[in-house]
View 1: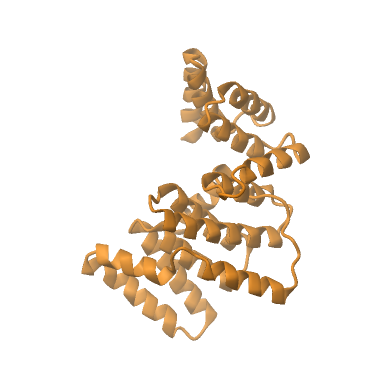
View 2 (view 1 turned 90 degrees about the vertical axis):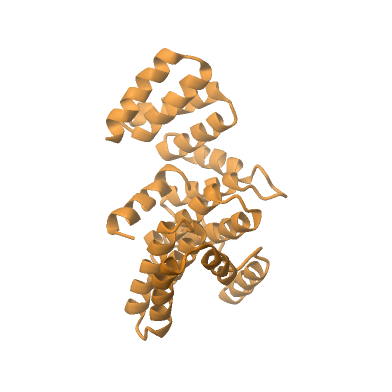
Length: 262
């Protein structure tokens, strides 16, 4: 994946998927045990996902990723392994398998251990949640996205974008035992940072999704007061006013959305 493509995916972190409050400090031995339990409970595995993908692809498509996989396995230095993982993530993403792309982005983050690399891994998994129609794949990507965003938070607890991304991961695929978890996380974050545009945009998007257009307009207009030229806010306002049936306002914000997005 090119630097521009990585930048686009990272930008999506701030616009679409997001995180919440700081990670709980857990002793290393307990954290390792919890991680092992979490992985053992996964609905599928990276190897199973790759086997299924290879069965769907042509030999000419499989050959490059297989060569990169062997390159990563034989690499003696972390720098060479990281380069192979980045290329693998890029290739699988271009082939249309964000779950596998996310796995290799996660492997890369394990080497670099930066908030940016964990955020990219989480965002790639979040794209998988949005695109996949298989519940086991969505479940796999949800658990991995949560863990990646939590790692990003632990490295920089002050970065609100990571917290919003985590919350939106939960809203994209809510836990069966706590379906409002993501929404409640966003609301609490909004109480702590009432003027934060990322949070207001996230809440506005959710309001549009649930047909609460008046509430969406209220939140997005508040965001617009803080950042009048925020492209995401203007685009969302166009959708919100269209939902309300106000075609004039919808057209006004749609034009500004196009202008700011160019």
